[in-house]
Length: 320
Image (cartoon, rainbow, N blue to C red; front, side, top):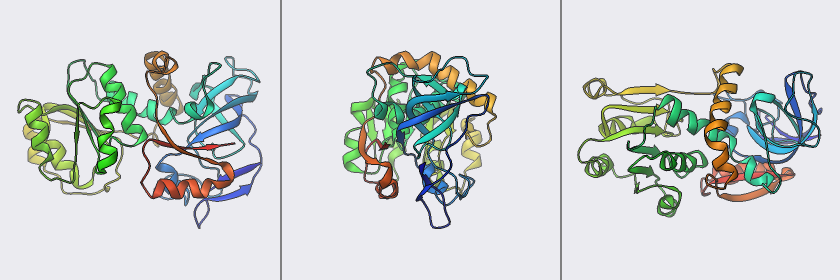
């Protein structure tokens, strides 16, 4: 089968063996696959992402071809959306606990770009972040697919006000369409003052941070006493000066999350909780992501180049 795989030179399109489902797995004929920032490092199997020579892709949608002996919920012909690894391919396997039925009429392209954002932000906001209705939320790096989903979940769960940050003027202007009450530009070093003013000097209760790096102390400045910061991504850098006194004075819970060290049972529980809490809203069209552009699988290298250029809004998808 054709697949976009990692190599020493980055992403390459190759012919590789079709995967065979294990007893707990679902084999899907992929119809669409969502791209994510982690795919860029996985293309060279760097920073702990990816395996050299393996197909990339963390989320996809398609039709079930075969299932393992332990799989009870799915059968060949079912429409599904799934997460795991190997979605840049004509066929991919996922654990049954990471596979969700897709109703008729829901497009494969729209479904394929949802799992990573839904799993990550439901876990960050609700499970790790302990969000309560009426609390204020900041989504740092809100113009990404994950960020846009975070704005929508926060708004749906009764957060107020909801802040979203973006450094691109055009993308920042669109954040209010997805639930942001206030859009902030973190290129201005005084942006925490805007958050403090909008919260009556208290600061934000919960921040989901996709940026990190040199923004960490400003985020803490913008955080309320007993606030929470959930560190989801590190696009701004993995190291920075950290004001331990500010952290202690505000008694902030600083929480790190990643899927890389989670067990299969932990990931299944994340998917289960998200599905129970949000999937009805997804099917009703209340939670969705804009697709900036689609590419055929044969053009997966160009699709990654488009993502690397960082000019897109929302998600990029491969279609088969």
